[in-house]
Length: 111
Length: 118
Image (cartoon, rainbow over all chains, first blue to last red):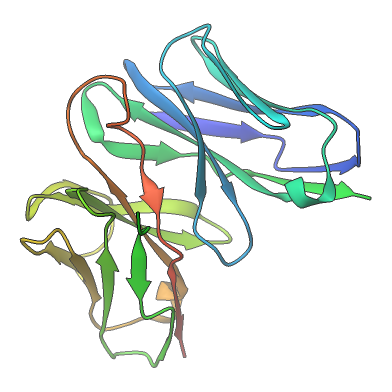
């Protein structure tokens, strides 16, 4: 069964303390892997799409990377406004209409 | 370009009632997906519509149904509400095309409808 697992469930960082979030997946033929940011009570906000192993995408303090089994979201010198839940989703080749979401990593950045 | 809109934003219902939620996708997007989000279960896929046809369905009871109109707007209906249906209901739109790569695969979410069942 296709699965997406995110770790850690929660992460507390001091402002400026860099770290990485993990998203591991098992899917028969990856079509795309997606990262979202979600603030409390709001809909997820699209961040990145990754399609193939070795691919990297960057946006401000965030950098997403992809291997054949997992993706990392690296956060460099985070600020309190980076506090949010980060969600990972995968899309399979055989069923491109359906997205499988992980349970998310709740990031809290203290000033 | 306007984003995905959902109405209403908040709803309070009692057990046994039914509810209809609405979603207007981004202009030009033909695929609309619905998700239920709760603290314990995370984002759970309900169903996906493309050109008025349901292409995918998650593991939810038949009380949950949906439809899509010719202008791609979509509605979701929940009948005989239960306490456990209290959740944030999210709608996401995408182009829904089968083409590989490019901008065809990303889903963009609306702000959600917060449903509380008393």
